[in-house]
Amino acid sequence: MTELLTTVAILFIVAGPFLLVANRFDLPTVPLLILAGIVGGLFVDEGQTLELAQFGIALLVFTFGVGINLSAVRTVLGDSELAAVAQILVVGSLGLGFGVLVGVPVEEAVYLGIAVALSSTIVGVALFQTEIRRNLVRGRLAESIQLVQDLTAIVILLVLGAGTLEADPIATQLGYGLTLLVMAALVNHYLFTLIGRLAGDSDELMIISVISILVVFIGAAELAGVSIVVGAFAAGLAVRHDPVEYLGLFNGLTSVRDFFVAVFFTTIGALIVLPFVEMGMTASVEKLLLVAGLVVLTAVVKPIVTTAILLYKGYEARSATLTSLSIDQVSEFALIIAIEALILGFLTQDVFDVIILAAAVTMITSSLSQRYNEQIYRAVADRGLLAGKHRKIDESSRVPEDLADHVIIAGYGRQGRQLVETCELFDQPYVVVENDPTEFETVRRECDAFVFGDAMERYTWKKANVEDARVILSTIDSDPVSRRLLSLGFDAEIILRTGDVSTALDLLEAGALYVTVQDLLASERLVQYLQALFDDETTPDALRERLRAEVEQYSAVRRQ
Image (tube, rainbow, N blue to C red; front, side, top):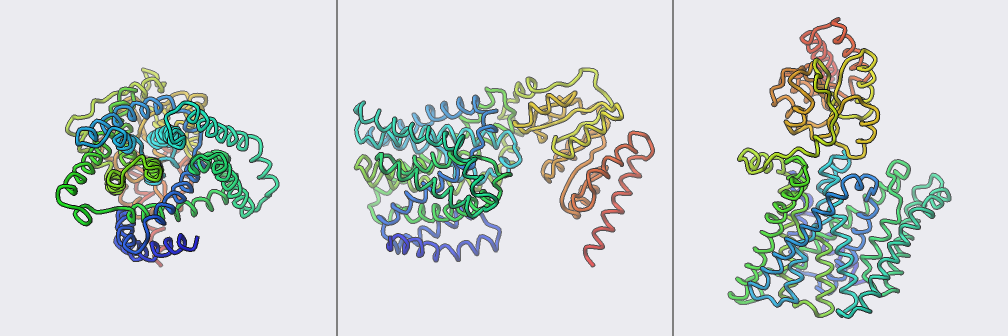
């Protein structure tokens, strides 16, 4: 244990300066953490690093399990199952075939296929957390695809833990794994509420209780002889997903996750063995060829396959593309599978090194592809490489054919509901545009007309009959969405939302009729102005000038 703590200390001492550089120059942290791990790897033992990687991955898988919202994932699970399974079969087969083609034995090439087929919950969810919090379709799709892949990885881990391909040991391992998952479901459904009552309002007691659940499940996994990662994942599923009721618990676990994310990436860097350093020229070239092939299959082929499947299922090109760009990396599950195979003697050190290096490269490229995902999508879409399919929007929308002179309300949150109530009070026709899968049933039940689609896509607005609309009201606090609406050249007046005064002034200059500033203008005041506009008590130009004066006055007061 002392050696393990020493390893953690060394890696964090080395990582500190790299994180300071990332923060100072607003750089992605993943590449610098991996680079720090490469440097730190010069001072730590590989055996300790492997052990640290196993425990680190287990704890991260636990926090991912805690964050799974099955009720939200269920709305897109059918499509994600198809995407995940097809991706595993297609990309995994390509990885296996590529490994055999370059001379890797079939029994080891299987692990190359696993590496390219599975995607990282750590990288994907961490980078896509904004979309998940906002309940956007692409965030939920990415989360559910990774859930299906993780369950597949758990099955592979259980089979690998049997140490043989004989039916009885494998069936025993799968039985133990299924038992752990059933125990998790029972704890989640029956025991967790009791734990919450006994803990009262104490966040500390809830965190200790959840950690105790984790320890029990990991202990049960050890006792059954299965991977601790399986036990950790089951423990995460045992925790009730309710960030509102258990806010303190989830905040505490977020801090734990962030700590082990840093440990994970530095550990990956420490495990890297660079070609040309410890081997001859021929061996180095072969290793680099393998790494390059895995990176291309993971970062290029896998997103293309995923995008094609989601387009086939009727999703919009943007949602399909951005979803695929969030799963363009090697999974931490693939790494734990490779570590287990290395320890059991099923995988040679050279192939293990290839998987580790490919994982590090794809995690770096994934952080970059997420940062520039909109630019990547636009570059592909503008060249006509994405065929537009809108079956999902058509099936999930209800807009009267003769609708005209209406208001389009983007977002059905608290402000969106107030605006719908105002429109109904004044018999003003309206259409709600929403992209949250969990809100679909509510919107369909409460709204007369609605479009279930991405506000960034032109077809969504076409479906809402924007050409005949009177006003577009966006309740979405997103600068890219706001600027996209202004760039589409609609004739309707556009009302936007932001949390920043300077952004509000920029949006007014760009042509917005009105901008709701959260700190300055409440929803109720927007409703009042909207009523005045409907009653012809004010004009769009007068309303725009009134808001500009209020925002400038507020900005001047804040500067004093």
